[in-house]
Length: 47
Image (cartoon, rainbow, N blue to C red; front, side, top):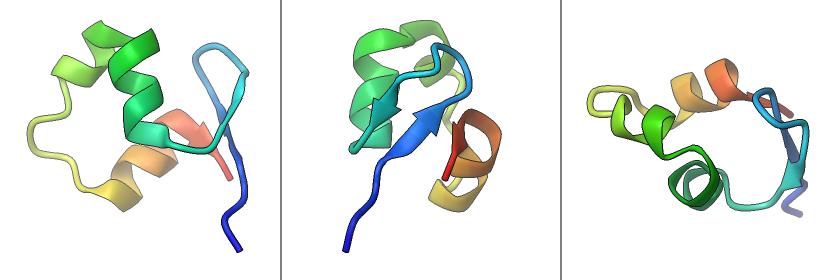
């Protein structure tokens, strides 16, 4: 049902995109004030 997405920044396969950005890429996470989930997935992850 839920697949894993591949991070474009570190090439890890992750299941929880926002949690991964918050824990692993704090600087990028801080830039996400106005983006919604589809834009975040398109910008940072390969589905």
